[in-house]
Amino acid sequence: MIVATTVDEVRRTVRAWKREGLTVGLVPTMGYLHEGHASLVDAAVAACDRVVASDFVNPTQFGPGEDLESYPRDFDHDCALLEEHGCSMVFHPSVDEMYPDGGGKTDTYVEILNDMPKQLCGKTRPIHFRGVCTVVSKLFNIVTPDKAFFGQKDAQQLAVIRKMVRDMSYGIEIVGCPIVREEDGLAKSSRNTYLSDEEREAALVLSKAVFLGQKLVEDGETDATKIVAAMTDLIQAEPLARIDYVEAVDGLTMAPVTTVEPPVLFAMAVYIGTTRLIDNFLVEA
Ligand code: AMP
Image (cartoon, rainbow, N blue to C red):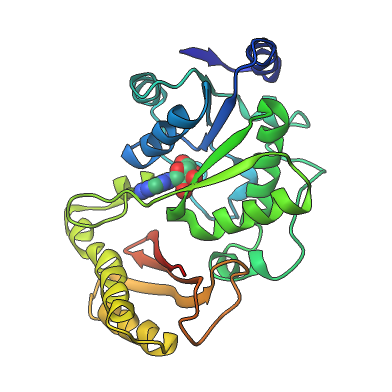
């Protein structure tokens, strides 16, 4: 596996691949990789001749007081996992390589101006999706992939990226991949490492709420408000949990909905202690 730290190196390598007629898949990540990330690499390896994973904690998507500095990092472990899953190249740039003006700042952003990035996570993370769109847009320009792979775990991010690709005419296919969970249901996340043993146990309320919501939909409940209320009650019964949001939204636009008319996304963000975790399920047609 090639380890690239500069934009030039990535460009030269991808150009050579393309001259050979090979297709390229991109898996953007912030590192501290787990089986959720690995599933995206597996999907990319199955669909493309060469796979590039980016491993970069992107400062422009973190707000003041968020966990940019403390975000977990283990590049050696990441390389081992990526290599094992057949990744061709990891792009691990410095902050200055990605943001040449210095200080992890940029004067140029890609930003969706409608309400989509203001819903759900955008309510408490107002600059988050502007940072995500900007860094993913830069990665698209650097790697020029045929396909890019994102997890349904970050459902709003996936919707925002799909919208950005349409609006900006990127000729890139966006592939959404299912949520990978621990055996007991907890969605895998790099941030799970922040949890104490007691909090790890308490964090199961997120997946339990997802499973409860899914069961209610399966049983024929069509009132999204009732489903959200049941999920909320379940989470509120856990003393270590504090709800940021539990909501039903349109699966494409992220606008709030009150009935289960597919595609509907039931999404939540919940603090367990000081750790903010997200989970969701999508009801498709
Ligand atoms: P992150 O490193 O957290 O920015 O995530 C990088 C990519 O991995 C995003 O597309 C995430 O949605 C995806 N991802 C993270 N956790 C999971 C998971 N448990 N299952 C599937 N995809 C995931």
